[in-house]
Image (tube, rainbow, N blue to C red; front, side, top):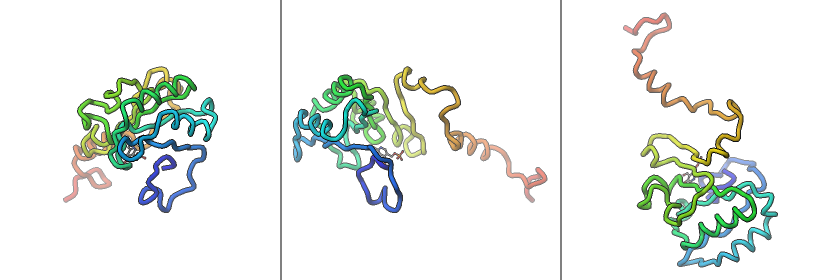
Length: 174
Ligand SMILES: Cc1ncc(COP(=O)(O)O)c(C=O)c1O
């Protein structure tokens, strides 16, 4: 919620938000053809890039208005991430899973992100999401240190539906 730029409706009534999330301009060839050097200049004016954990980018924006950035944009971010030592995360929640003609929209630019977020069309309406990443990152956390209370819910729901309803004494209702 800190990261989304769309205050209404997503952030309205929530908060406070996490600090130290910085936004860079998104190049829009038609309305805002911002040069790549300007993006780096803005980055350096906001934060020490060596302290940045990751850069999260939508390869094609969704809520921001379906903007296809210039072809040099993602390779430039990849190069910045390599140079300053932060991860490049592609948010493919809206652009991924075939919606741009390739499985992931970032494939059009030939770059390889460190992490990819997926949701929406990965399950076509079913509430499913995921993070795909390089093994060295995904396996960095020790077993049991990350999980989800409700992660098993679809399975639990399917099991509940498969079992006949019973009352508290274990008998089917009349
Ligand atoms: C591109 C993109 N990323 C992320 C999200 C939402 O992610 P979450 O619900 O995990 O905050 C959305 C929601 O529509 C989205 O469009």
